[in-house]
Length: 91
Image (cartoon, rainbow, N blue to C red; front, top):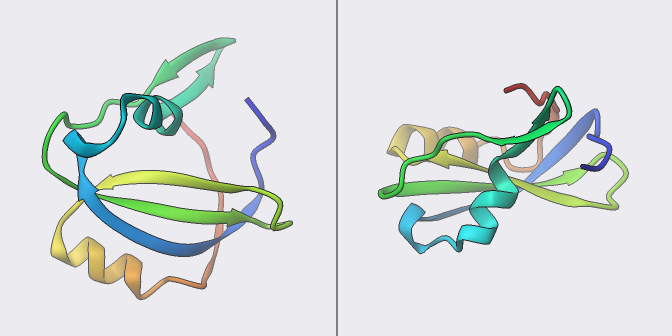
């Protein structure tokens, strides 16, 4: 796994359904390393989701994170497009 940036800018938000997302994308998005082992966060198999698209602080890489959808979350994240976030990765 590559170096995790310290900060990233939220570029945009996409709405979809978990069941429409390719398994390879879900595997990429949910993989993390702990004690030298690659593990995966659990996500629902079905239902609406939000895909948040970020650019690293140096602008050289783009990454995502998937969240379950609800209207309040969609409105909240939409209001933060263009903002810079601290990046934290935790199991």
